[in-house]
Every structure is written in structure tokens, then in C-alpha cells.
Amino acid sequence: MKIQKMAIQWFPGHMHLTRKAIATRVKETDVVIELLDARLPGSSANPMLAELTVTKPSLKVLNKRDLADPLCTELWLEYYNALPKTRAIGMDAADKGPAKRLIDACRELAPGRGGMAKPMRVLICGIPNVGKSTLINTLAGKRAAKTGDEAGITRLEQRVTLESDFYLFDTPGVLWPRIIVSQSGYNLAASGAIGRNAFEEEEVALELLSYLKQHYAHALRARYGLEEAGASTDEALLSAIGRQRGALQSGNRINLQKAAEIVLHEFRAGVLGAISLETPTEYAKWLASGQLLDAQRQARKSKKN
Ligand code: G4P
Image (cartoon, rainbow, N blue to C red):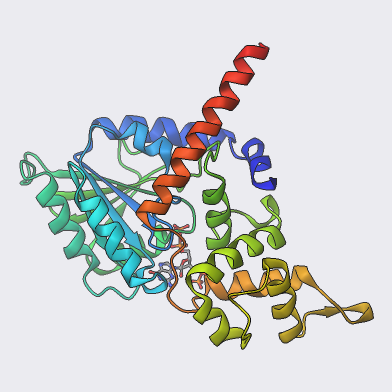
């Protein structure tokens, strides 16, 4: 599948640098905030980050909650809140008190920190496009002072002071070198986390339609007025959407590329409604089979060498 191709393009020098910067910062971190996309929390979690921060209390912020299915978001919040040393909250750009909610949740996770002698040091991470700049700008604009040029703060991070004894360190958004769960690759591409020349829009749109047909057929019917939305094949559905939206090329043929762009754009913008692409149970299944396939692949590779 095309998404695997990105592995090569995805490990540029800056990712090594970011990894190093995170590893250094983690040593002096009390809580790690991981910003996740509420529509795909499992797929938008960075396994590299999990490995680097395994010993630290973790706050999962399910961002873009306005775009996600509220029932799924509840399932994910329950799932994360049941994990040790972990809290989870939902959030979106319209949130009126993001700083207070973040501060309260972090103080709960690290009750021993606070006061000038032991200020709370929080690291915030998230994959590209998850909404980290938006959140940090809101935090920095309202009640925080941005400082990026102090000793000990690398060029790769910035520090935001949320309260006099509460520092937030920002890191650049990173993707990871390999995606072992193929459905995660599709979900990340559908969400807009992956640059558009790294995947085939038609392929991603077909995967998206396949999931929407099963779980949100009513949304497809409502948006595209297609009665048969739940019953037709993914390809027939994409063609029908293309026809309905006038995505045609010479000879009155459907322009599937254009149709795919329409579907992806409307999903990303929330025009199709509040939709999530995975539940904790679904994701756990995908992860287990992805890990199995990956282990088999690695075994074959080491046999060859
Ligand atoms: P990043 O730093 O993590 O890369 O992400 P950034 O804040 O740049 O946000 C990426 C896109 O997601 C932006 O849209 C931003 O407006 C949008 N966004 C951030 N938080 C939320 C949220 O809670 N809900 C929704 N619906 N969208 C959110 P954009 O189209 O790339 O830019 P623009 O339209 O804001 O100019």
C-alpha cells in the first residue's frame, strides 16, 4: 500500500533532533501532555513518544473534540482515564478555559510539584496539524509569557509560563518513521496529518468511505443524498458522490480524484458531521494485527541478512 512509501520520506534530520530534544527535556519533566486528534486518538498517538516518556505521568488531550463523535470520545476518555498515571480530557479551539483545565489536570497528576522551589514542568507534544499551535497561542495570548531564548531551552522548543510555578515546554510536531497499523496510516491521511503528496487521495477516500458506510451511513445519505449509501461498494459510492457533485471529466466520465478531494475536504472540515474513525476496541484489534505483521516482516528480514 502507498502509505508505507512514506517511511522513507519520514525520517529527516529534524526528527532525530526532535527526538534528542524530547529525550533531554523528559528528564526534567513532571507531566507529559500528549495532544491527540479526538477523531483518531489511537492512530494520532506517537509510539516514539510513548517510548521516550514511559516513566512520566501523562495527560491525554483529545483535541478537535468538536469534530469527533461524542460517544466515541467518551469511550476514549474512559479508556485513558483507566490507565495508570494517566488522565484524559476533551478539548477544542472554542474551549474557554483551556489553561485552567490543563493546569488542574497536571496538578492532579503530579501533586508533589508546585511553588517556586519545585515548579511544575510540563512537556506538550503532538503530531503535526493536531492543533498544538492553536492551543499554545490561546494559552500564550491570554495569560502566558512566551520565552524561547533562555539558557537550557533549545531552538527546538519554547517555554510558556502558565502560572508563576507552572511551565509548559513545547516541542515541534513529529510523525514517526514507520506506521505499522495500516488503518492508522489511512486515518492519519484522512485527518490531514500527513502531507498530501505522501498518499493517494483516492485510496484514502475509499478507505474513509468504507468506514463511514459501516458506521455513519446516515451522514453520507444526508450530505450526498444517496439512498444506497450503506449498500453500494466503496468505488460505486465514490463515483456516485462524484456524479452528484459534478466532478466530471472529458467524455462525461467521473473524475474520481476530484471526488476523493471533495470527500476528504468535507470530512476534515466537519461538514459530514461529528465523526470518529476509531474506537478503543477497534484500534486495539488493528494494533494487535499490525504488530503481528510487523514481527513477521522483521523475522523475514533478519533471516535474509
Ligand atoms: P499544529 O500546530 O498541531 O500543527 O496545528 P494547528 O494549531 O496549526 O492547527 C491545525 C488546523 O487545525 C488549523 O486549521 C486549526 O485551525 C485547526 N484546529 C485546531 N484546533 C482545532 C479544534 O479544536 N477544532 C477544529 N475544528 N479545528 C481545530 P487550518 O485549516 O490548517 O488553519 P486555519 O483555518 O485555522 O487557518
